[in-house]
Length: 429
Ligand SMILES: Cc1cc2nc3c(=O)[nH]c(=O)nc-3n(C[C@H](O)[C@H](O)[C@H](O)COP(=O)(O)OP(=O)(O)OC[C@H]3O[C@@H](n4cnc5c(N)ncnc54)[C@H](O)[C@@H]3O)c2cc1C
Image 1 (cartoon, rainbow, N blue to C red):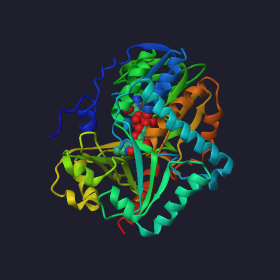
Image 2 (spheres, helix red, strand yellow):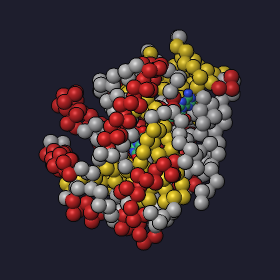
Image 3 (tube, rainbow, N blue to C red):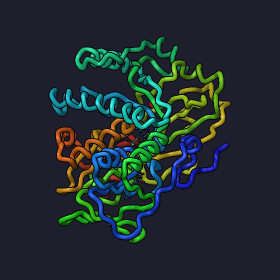
Image 4 (cartoon, helix red, strand yellow):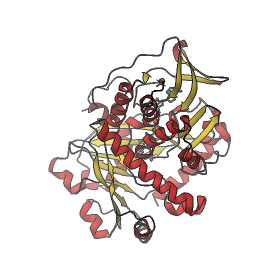
């Protein structure tokens, strides 16, 4: 049975097990700040923490509740590297930038672990991530990629898995092999967001919930108009609303498209849990619409599967995800779904993040395309560094190719839906 929803958060296993979190006041009246941050997810909260720690006066505007966007709803999976693999990055950005992007992603992982440790964020971090191939033809490439990470990128944590080795870890006959990344992992995503908010708040950032940015006006200073009639005048504005920001700034909307993805949480599986995932790692498979899953600390299977290409969420996410889960684990047909929820995430055409200077004093980082748990907190830091004039990583990421969606902000929807639906259909073949 679902626990009562926390106000402003969807009914989810995450909301039901969230750390206590105060309601931050709405923004009232006209205020000033050094930096105004739009969005209280990982990107915005991490930027706020960095800047407040550096002594800047920071206002965070969150349209709903802190962590109520993708950051409090996601699969909690910590992937290594960028969303595109190193082969793709080498091909599109060259070997030099590919090495820099790899190092940046490793730094992002270390930064995430450092945040959790420094601020004692109780978010159940656990190591291990398995990549599982659902087609026999994919396995040789996955094994070669694991070896490449070791040999070319000196990454010691990736190991190829044969079909039998994988089957010993994941109780499904749907896979033909894969690899395990001992330094990937998983965590409770909402509690990570709430912990970041608490740390930012303690460092002096002023967080306002239920305060939606309606317009960003650039002049000598940047002014943000806020729902309820308030406004913030700031030296800098950081747009950190990811997919949920859609409609605020056309310069972002051209490049970042919101899509919906869904998760179901089963009832606690008790002794059966170990027969589903033996080593408590997270698992992501090779489908275009990825199935991703892991065990919660109370032994539920948290299974992510299925996405829809529109701004609104399905009415019964649990029922929507269930067939995806049963295709991988038919033995769970008797198991109850206790929670189902969906969330909106931003994707880009190339699936590389969209990092851009939108105006002289307006910056954005968004469009992590399903890889924001590890990347977004670090990209908040990259934005904070850029405000302080440290531009190396900002400029590196701004070079990543993220062309606009065909059709522009208006026509991109039908074109994207048609394109993605085609690939989603290929998963079923
Ligand atoms: C179902 C699902 C599963 C996922 N699984 C994974 C996973 O396993 N691993 C992984 O790495 N990534 C995953 N992701 C992606 C990951 O959650 C995101 O990349 C990451 O949370 C992005 O953080 P963010 O701070 O940029 O955006 P968000 O967390 O979405 O935060 C943006 C915030 O901005 C606010 N906002 C938007 N517009 C305005 C406005 N105009 N004014 C004020 N506030 C505004 C929103 O309310 C929101 O709280 C998943 C996403 C979803 C939805």
